[in-house]
Image (cartoon, rainbow, N blue to C red):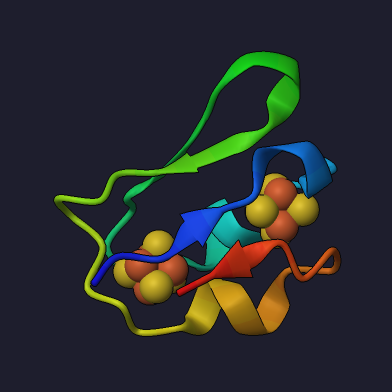
Length: 57
Ligand code: SF4
Ligand code: SF4
């Protein structure tokens, strides 16, 4: 299962994108981030570093 970013709670800090080991997080509008579900390996690293705790399983 891929992780999911809850869009309305994302503050666009980019920490998850820098942390992702497979580079599957990218920027969308308003600097919010999106996880490519086909590339995410569900390691959980982004979830640990997100200051808004807006990444869920
Ligand atoms: S769970 Fe791991 S692979 Fe998936 S988006 Fe987060 S850091 Fe990247
Ligand atoms: S770490 Fe969290 S708040 Fe920051 S860009 Fe990623 S999902 Fe958004």
